[in-house]
Structures are given as C-alpha cells and as structure tokens.
Image (cartoon, rainbow, N blue to C red; front, top):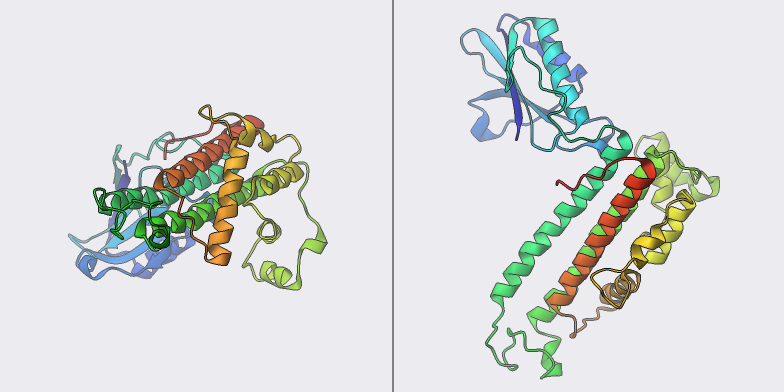
Length: 340
C-alpha cells in the first residue's frame, strides 16, 4: 500500500524558504492539474539521481494555507525502494528541522516510516535489475489484454469465406487479409522490442553496478558523437558502449554476457529444457526473431502464425527473463524478487 505523510508548519514561514528547501532535497515542480488547484498550491516529484534505480518516486504536495498552517504532503506508492523510503523519511526530518511544527505518518505523530516497509533490494545492482524485470512484466500486460480483446472479436463460428473469422488455410488468397493474421504478426515486433530492451538494460545494470572482470572500455567503440553526449551529460559512458551492442538473437546475447563476465553461463538458460518441449528455447526464440525480421523488413505476413504461437513465444521469453534474473542472483549473491 501507499505510505503517506503530512507535515504541518506555520504559515508565517516565508514561502520562498520552503520552496528552497524542497528544491534542495531534489524535488522537481510539476504543474497542478486544474481539478486539484483548489487543494494544492504546488506539486513536486522526486526521483533518485540514478534514474535506473527508480521504482515509484515520491510525490510531494503543498496545500493552501488553512488554520494558519501550511501542510506538506508526501506519498510513495506500493513497491517503493529502500532509496525512496529513506528519502521520504529524510524529507520529513529536514522540513521539521528547518521549520519546526510536526508531522504525521501512517505510523503516528512524529514517527518515521519503518525502514522495512519497502521492497527488499538494498544494492544498486539488485535495484536496477529488479526495475528492469518490473518494466518487462508491465510491457507484457497490454499485449495480454489485447489478446483477450482479439479473441472475443473474432467470428468463431464464421466460415472460411468470412474475412473476420479465424478459419485460415482453406482460402489462402483471403488469409493474408484476415485481421487475425495481421494481429498475430504485428504483435511480434512489440514483443521482441520489449524482450530486447529487458536483456539490454539488465546487461547495462550489471555493467554499471556489478563487479565484473571486463568493463569493455575500448576507445574504438566510441564515436565523436558519443564523446559529446558524455560530455553534455546526455549519456553515460556505459550507455554509449552498450548501445552499440545487439541483444536480439540468443547467440549474440550469450556472447555479450560472456564478454562481460566469463562466469555467467547465459547459454544454459536457453538450452535448459522447458515444459518437455523437444525444441530448445534457443531455437524457438531464434526462429521467431527470424520471422519478426521478415515482417519488419519485407512486409511479410505468416498466415500460419496463430495467437497460440504468439502466446507461446511470450511464455518463452518470460521464462528466459526469469532464468536470467535467477542466474544473476546466484552469481552476485542476491535473492530475485518476483513480486511485481
């Protein structure tokens, strides 16, 4: 559940001083929605400096003066990190130290939030990998909802001559125009994009925060544009290097992780049996990526691709994502957290 607080200070406090402290705490002002202007004078949001460690952030709102008091509210949503919880407590402490008054939390008057009332990850590596697994999980949810919608929209009892039915294979010249065929094919680029983003950003997390043996710092990998982005703070050194690597096909994923840490046996997560299937996850995923490339680059539609095939592919990449998370936990001594 969310953790909420209210700090009460005198309205005699110079408002500019309050804003100065809030900004020094790292909060960034956000526009107050029209329907909330009656309640709040200012609204802010806080993220960690390392944005790849952000779970939910911290909301901070300043109310209008009431009963000669200004109220400063904070809120973190369920799933908050230890970084966010610590900063929420620090915000309460700093406001009280500077301006007096008192605060109330879900734990009582002038009582800080319990340090355990957050996700269990403590290190930057644990947090950054968890965030990426969470993002990947959320990326799949819209497609699962979409699959239910498409399933309910098809004419299940329609004949092969009905363009909106799912009866493929009887009239091949019509099949390529069927919404069910188009739907099944266009889901693959999205799925593979979410998959590649997860594998790449987990690699980046290990690269940045893991104690790996090979930091890949090769000058020839960086262009003048990369160096300019690094100088301007638009991109980190690690991001510039990782952006030049591919993370789509299993063989390149395995090679990249091996280059980063020779003790990471990523090959095993693709070859380990899954649900007694005769074909390895390595081959199944590679075949679907080959089809995706034909769809994207050649405008090809596979009329034999079913919604069941799409859901099976989603299941496959989810299994590999979980195995990679577990493998990294074993290698870097942390317990994977599958509570999303």
